[in-house]
Amino acid sequence: MKLTFKERLIVLGLLPTEGDITTIRTLTELRTALQPSAEEVESWEIRSEDNQIFWNQDAEESVDIKVNAVAKMVIVAALNTLNTEKKLTADHLDVYELFVEEKEDATA
Image (cartoon, rainbow, N blue to C red; front, side, top):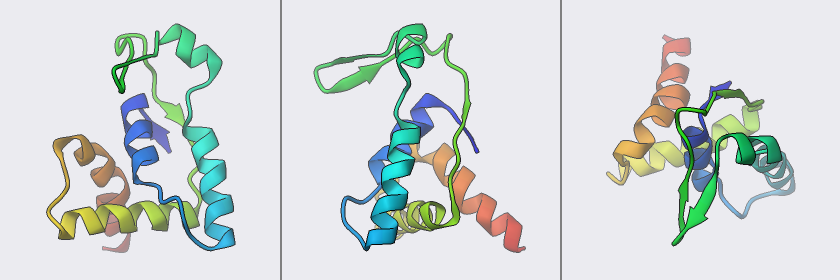
């Protein structure tokens, strides 16, 4: 699945820190894949200041991230919970459309 760096950050923020062994192993692999590589940090000029992350969005490219079925279910559940609790933000919109609405389209 092609994700921008911002979408990768949003997904990282959605992932739980607890679960069963299968989920934790899957999410550990996904976290590793979502983290920027050393090359991305350098070429996109990624930096952290005052607990915020900044990068050169003009240099950024979408990256193909493998998201298996278990990880996708966890992400969709987290987004659905935020939606039900009316806690989605504008930052979540692209990720919501990628994961939740794409799933709905596939079942329609």
